[in-house]
Image (cartoon, rainbow, N blue to C red; front, side):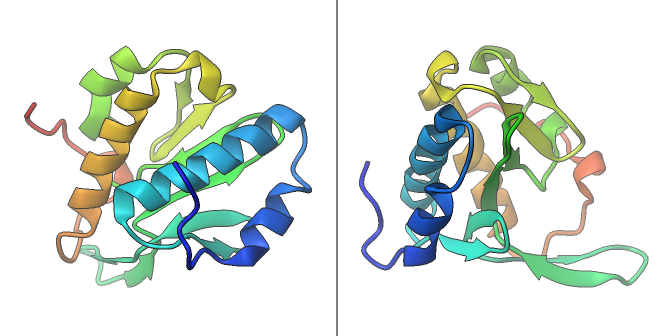
Length: 148
């Protein structure tokens, strides 16, 4: 994978500051991966690196937008945001390798220990779901997508 030509140069500067070195390495890989999945350049949003946008509208009337595919390199783990919910990807997560999860977060301590093809499949499905139109579920309401 190689960086998207329109990638925000602040991303590389930011990743140079990330500790430990493994998280810096994983951040570079994840930035390339989300660009490959989305076909769009990554942007730095505070300390989150993301591509694309998705719009959401909840039954409560709350609306907003965010990156359709994103991650954050943190000291303890890289966090991949799955705003369609981890339950939407449970069968693939079972095949991923070492990880932990929160409601809409996938925590990866070492990308070299996971199956990157499975991770890419999870990201592709999540990105397709979030970028297909206005998303109306909260991450905790995600449902397992049919296998295809």
